[in-house]
Image (cartoon, rainbow, N blue to C red; front, side, top):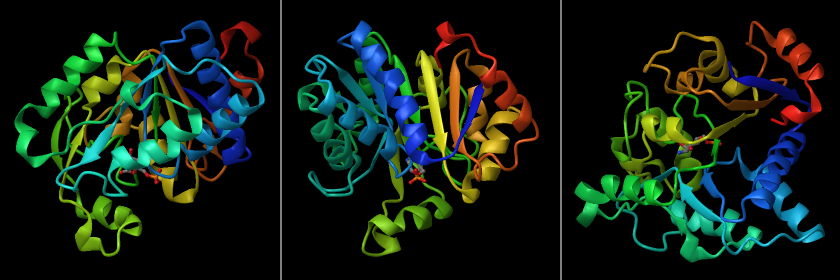
Length: 261
Ligand code: GLP
């Protein structure tokens, strides 16, 4: 089962995740990070950047694969996930941009973009740690409800709900692309460690469904129940609909130090 850790702030969750990622890079300098966009993982990137500023680590060989990308945004569009990952992750962590890939959302090459991305992840030896947020529809990456648990990187059509949720990053809702390229749930399942973060009451239903609901492609986040190493970092509000919340706290309080997250 996923390890659920309820923390009192986003900052605390970011610090915990960043410490785990830092330890990974220290023991594997060419570690492969699975990078998520959205507001949720920002505390992780900020904590890791702060830790590196205080105590530098060689980041020159770290590799990264973004989870998803919009289709059809012009190159360099500030809300393309390539631009977001560059701004929020590559620059603050001092990563080499040549080591970081995002799915290719160029309309001209969509037919082969998914399989090319899968091949690149495979050639890199797979993702060591995948950071994940979750959408209110229960999507991870852009795997909307109904996505196959075996899916690979491919084009998806965004739900209206997701387009409305993401409209805050654009000048108007109709500027949010209709399509995206996203790693599949099968791709995500192959990452060796998943760290899923969620904050706020509006994520409580999605988290309850992912952690405790039936495993169902109607709730794509429930894919975590099929994975052997998952850490769910949530605040009280996002944890508020978990039936076994007390047990998770009890289990975390009684962990052995060697277990890490
Ligand atoms: C987008 C991203 C997801 C992210 C979700 C939630 O749809 N493709 O990877 O998890 O938004 O975003 P936020 O973290 O801003 O709530």
